[in-house]
Amino acid sequence: LPEIDWEAVTKEATDLLARFIRIESMNPPGDEVDACAFLGAVLAAEGVDHTTYDAGSRRVSLSATLPGDTSLRPLILLNHSDVVPVQEEFWTVEPFGGAVRDGQIWGRGALDMKGMAVMELMTFILLKRQSIALRRPLVLLSVADEEAGGAWGIEWLDRHHPELLDGEWVINEGACGFASLLDQDRPVFAFCPAEKTPLWLTLRARGPAGHGSMPLPNAAPVRLTGALQRINEWQRATRVLPVVDAMFDGLVQGRVLAERPDAGQIPALARVAPQLRAMTTDTVSLTTSNYGVKINVIPALAEATLDCRLLPDRDPGEFLAELRGVIDDDDIEIETMFVSPSGISPLDNDLTATARAVTREMMEDSLFVPVISPGFTDSRTFRRRGIPAYGFCPSLLKTEEFATIHGHDERISIENLKLGTQVIYEVTRRLCAA
Ligand SMILES: [Zn+2]
Image (tube, rainbow, N blue to C red; front, side):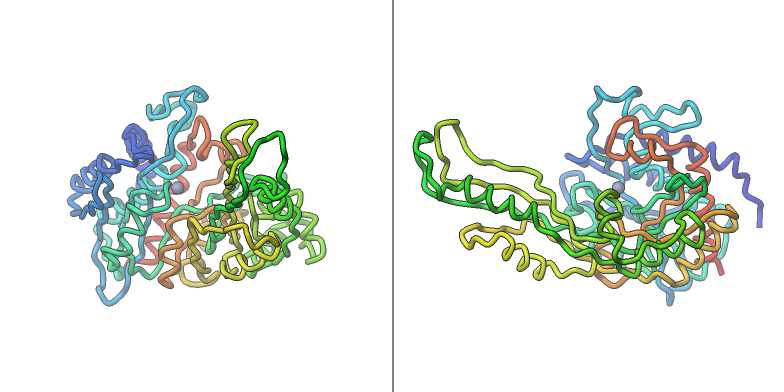
């Protein structure tokens, strides 16, 4: 095999990412057509065919395949080409400028997730250039609309091109690594086999309208406020799922944690560590409320929205029944706006074993631990179909870099772009090469 010149590959990846960032694909409106044209042109230059899928309204997804034994299902390298909007006034660089400086590539999407898309694209291109024979097909899948729930992207493909989702495994966003964790200077690669289930609710109270000078005890805002108060005081159980159990094991073995917290300690720990709380409990955030029209008018309607995130094995119907009990007011209407349960992918299979081995070989002192992602990604659509999907972005981020995801001055270091490309390439090669 020709040896890979990783310095040259890194330069190429850096240039690709800078150019990819310059293609604005903010969602809303999404408009992924130019992003797909860019990816398509890069693939065409390597002599690889691609297919685009037009969901309408310039919402386009793309796939390309390196063929293998057709009796085996492919490994799917999944990414999304849309990005979230920016508040330009808070940025110190042009958000869509794709600047390369101070060892970083700057711009919206650098981490979420054009950077990882480039790692996957480079992997795909390198395997093609090396003419490596594959036993298992390799699919590069770049979808639209992830940032708005995927109705024009993965969910659309799920309905119109289900064959595209038929993989053996999926590698996607959903977990980045940590340069250091809990003050321990030790690289931790994270992978995510499960995500919280989003359950978005609107609560609605109706009541008599009237003059603000004469309070009505049964007024809609009064009843809704009472319900929100009870929800706020609701103590939900803490549960340690096997994924979190394995995470604790890994962190203790790697001496990032001195000892594993016992079940009794976790509720107290979870109260002060939002990430641990997200991984061990169903959470509820009050996100909007809309109560009235004027200061001296008692409104007949009061509404609030709740962003609930359930542990991945929790039945949404069961949660709703408990919530109803907590609200304890039959006149409050609960409307489900969005719910998308997915399931839990295996902790141990060829993919996770390979990723564990590759990260360990690449960085001897590194750890490889599973996490539950508090947010949701397109992986859920695959898991729903029983296809193992993993969040696995093998970059080692510093705390301040994590904060730029959906924030300001988003950036990825060239070093992380290189590391991620090397890891994804090697994992893919081992899983697919003949
Ligand atoms: Zn993303």
